[in-house]
Length: 451
Figure 1 (tube, rainbow, N blue to C red):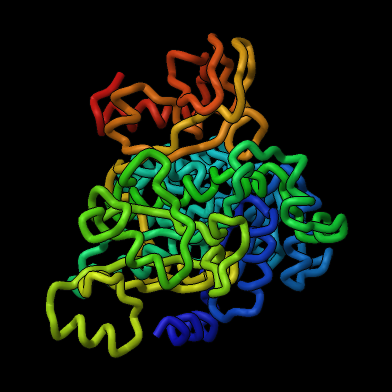
Figure 2: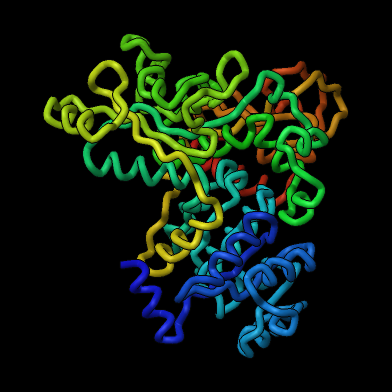
């Protein structure tokens, strides 16, 4: 059992040593959770805001005299060797340390996550990517790098892509066909154009909560404008090999009891043109009111299919929700626990060399779509910002049409006017030449032969 193996590491004085990059809401929660576990320790944190890293360690019960700010690799090694918890603004120091086993990136910034993962793999460290924004941009290539290096590249348990992948893996292992897999949302009619300034009112955050839980307005706005759900389902798509049925997915407004019926093929009374796809279930009814049944906005689901009458009877008998055709059934989990469950992925990587989930190919992309009419010369600000949002598209389409991946959009400058709702192409912008751009070029060249 996992708990037994962790307990043994504790008894042996050989805990799994974790290095964390990014100490926002997720990172702080991870430190707090690991602090109560046996056989695992967060040894070092990198964040450009050193005070944030200190606060994360405080959340884990560490006092100021137990932490030490380091400026270079020697300082990091010395601090860790003496039992201190190291704090730095340079993630590469943690990736290169011999006293760290697993690196966790929780920054949510594609450029940072790409560099962190690359450095971790280069130094033969397992990499756990909370950073789905980086994963959907260059994850397939980073996974190939990790395989070649003999280390684990994994998305994280507790986040919705990883939680959904657990159900997908369970279902496919048992021989079920996956009709649709996804997560819930709470999208209102005007949310797609939402901007960071509206986050406190939209989510009901007080000033005290914003400060205490390190609420990042841009990140939370990516939930409001739908980008985060699209990004997460792209990550799941690449893990499970399930493409979207249509660009942006259908995202029907449904109660839990409707999902298996609505997310079925058109010929069976559903909305899908093809089976085996990623999808979203909007927990807001068409009239704008929350359904009487528990909404699935915090949960995940998989619609499975079996043609065997005996198994169909068993599923009905054990209260799996039927889709109406007698063959499709809903499996769902009404919650995901974010950082609380993340240590499971860290332990699986370190103890078994296994991921919660990782890209098996380049199935889908998150493309960049204008939130409003944009003029030439406008500098784009990436997911959750004021200018663009992200939408899922099949990778074969996005690469063929030269559509700009959302992960490369921040800092890109428009060279022509773009109308609201239009997909932005490489030909519409001047993009940077940073590290994430280089890795994306390598991914497109090696996987698609694209220049």
